[in-house]
Length: 210
Image (cartoon, rainbow, N blue to C red; front, top):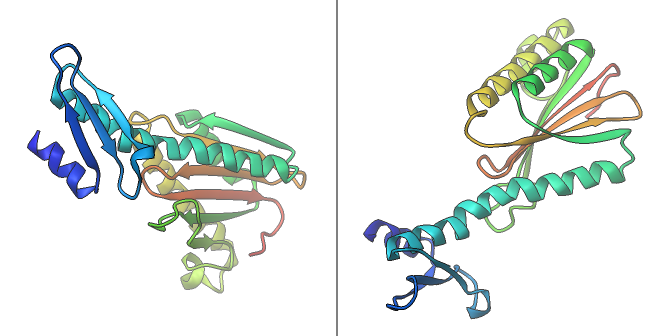
């Protein structure tokens, strides 16, 4: 229990524990930066269980909600931008094979990582890493050999796919797959809950400008 209490203290959470012989132990909590109006509560068969449930409610559950909330918002943005089709699909081995197949079927690609690691606002993009064919950093050593650019980006994609394969059994994650009117295919992976970023791959038969 000492470790849990230390955890809440480090997170700036104010706690009150109520023990009544007629009811289950209850933990009341006010998260850091919040007021009594934001009071949360959780109970359990024991005080320890009540504390663990509060930890899940305040932190673990909230973290998992980041992906879900972001997925809904990003999908809506694509729909509002008149994409030909937009689908949200659970990441699976089949999906990872498909993204590699699409990469092989298109002439050009771009890798874009949008970072949401601003401590004060996790909904704001505060940094973007972009790798394309002729722009970014990966291609610098092959500046005079355009035929290698697509291959270098595919290697980066393969590393990403390998990482996602290792995570398949840990959590249920989803990818937004977009088909545009121009024939481009976009795979938008949302990883806000653990890496605080979105990784976006665009595949096209036309050159992609940055």
